[in-house]
Amino acid sequence: MTKPKVAVVGFGPSGIFASASISEVADVTVFERASVMGGQWNFMEEELVEPDRQHSSMYTCLWINAPKEAYELPNHRFDGELPSYVKRPVMYRYLKEYHLKYGQAAKVKFNCKVENVTNTAKDKFSVTWVDNAQPDYPQMETFDYVVVAVGHFSVPNDPIFTNEDKFTGKIIHAHDYRDGRMYKDKRVLLVGGSYSAEDIALQCWKFGAKYSHITHKNPNRMGYQWPKGVVETETFLKDFDGDKVIFEDGSSEEYDYIVKCTGYVHHFPFMSEDILLKTENSFCPENLYQQCVLLKNPKVFYMGMANQALSMTIFQHQSFYIRDLISGKIPLPSKDEMQTHYEADRAENATFTHPFEMVRYQGRYANRLAELTGAVKNGGQCEILIEWIKTKLADVTDYRNKQFNNFYTGNLSGENKVNWFDDREP
Ligand SMILES: Cc1cc2nc3c(=O)[nH]c(=O)nc-3n(C[C@H](O)[C@H](O)[C@H](O)COP(=O)(O)OP(=O)(O)OC[C@H]3O[C@@H](n4cnc5c(N)ncnc54)[C@H](O)[C@@H]3O)c2cc1C
Image (tube, rainbow, N blue to C red; front, side, top):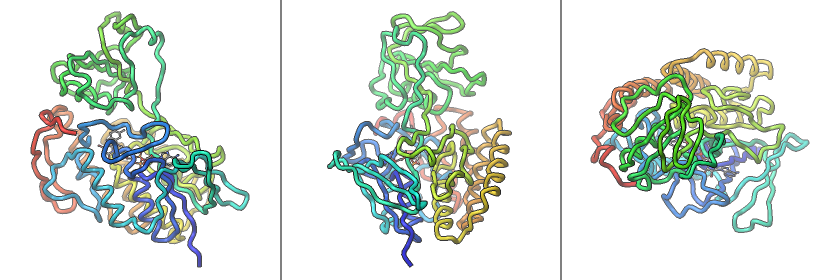
C-alpha cells in the first residue's frame, strides 16, 4: 500500500518533531524557507540565508526563559552536567541532534518558501513553493495532508501610536532587537507587559543602559522587584515630543529608543481562505480540535499554535498525535464531537486568571494527548514551571542562576559556570 504524502511547512522545533514522527507512517516532505533548520533557535548559528526577512525574533546572549527540565523530552535528554538555564546555541544543538537521531526518513527542502496551499477538488492539497535559487520558477506538488509548523512569534503585532512620528529617537519592534551592547548608556522605553518587555528591559540593564522603563496598559503589575535602573511605570504612553515621551498621568521622560514589545500575530499568508487558521494567542487556540486539527478541514494540522509553557513537550505530543491520526491508529471523532470537545476546551481555558492554572491546563493537555497515543506522560513537568514562576517572582535578576531537579532522574542539574548577569557571550 502506498503511504500517504504529507507536506510539513517549516523546520523549526515543531517541523523537526513532525517530520520525525510522521515519517514513521507517511512519506514526508518538509519545506523550509531558510537555508538551515531550527526556526527561532537558529539565529546567527550557521550560514543562515533567508528570503525577505529574518524569521527569528531572538537575540545575542539569549538564555532560555524557563528551566530546560520543564520541556526536556523522554527520548532525547540533555547532558546531565548542563545547568537548568542554557543559552540559545545549546537549544539549537539539542534540536538538531533530535533531527539527526529520529528524522532522517523525511525529505527536507531547504531554501524553499511555501507560497500557496490550496485544497483541490479531490480533497488533496496543492502546495506551491519557490526555491530561493530559482525565484522565477514556482514549483507545485500534491499532498494528502498538510502540517503547518511556521510558529507564531515572528510577524510583529505593530500598533502605531498617535504622533509616534514626532519621536526623534528610534522606534523598533522587539522582533528587531538584536544585541544588548547597542543600548549601553542609552535611555530605553519598552512598551508591553509580557516576556519580551521583561527580558529586553533586563538585557538593556545588564549591558549598561542608562535606564530601561516599561510601560503597559495591563492594570496588573508584572510583580517583580526590578533592579535599580529598571522601572515599570504606573502609566501608559500618550504622546511624543522630540526625544520626550509624555505619559497619561502628565509626566514625561526622555528616551533614545522605544522598543515595542507588543507581541506577534498568527500569520499564514500562504494558506487559502478555506484552510486558513484564524486565532489569537491563547492557551487554547481558536478553531482547532485538540489544539492542532483544523476543525473546518481535519486533514490540515497546525502545530505549536498555543501560548507556550511546556513548548517542546507539547510540540512532540502533537507530532505523535498527528502521526496516529494519519495512520488511522486513532480514529478521528465526528465533526459534531470535535466541535463539542473544542467548545468545552475553550470554555475551560476562558475561566483561568492565574498563571498556575494556565500552566496546569497545558500539562493536562499534554497528558491527554499522551493517553491517546500511548506516549510517556510528561505533562507533570508543569510543576517545575510553577516552581520557576515562584523563583522568578522572588528575584527576577537571579532566577536563571537557580538549578532544578531533572524530571526523569530526580538529579539536580549542573551549576552555571558564569552567572546570568556576568555572562556577556552570545
Ligand atoms: C525572543 C524569544 C524567546 C523565546 N524563548 C523561548 C524559551 O526560552 N523556551 C522555549 O521553549 N521557547 C521559547 N520561545 C518560543 C519559540 O518560538 C519556540 O520555542 C519554538 O521556536 C517554536 O517552534 P516552531 O517550530 O513552532 O516555530 P519556529 O521556531 O518559529 O519555526 C518556524 C519555521 O518555519 C519557517 N517558515 C515560516 N514560513 C515559511 C514558509 N512560508 N515556507 C517555508 N518555511 C517557512 C521558518 O523559517 C522557521 O524555520 C521564544 C521565542 C522568542 C521569540
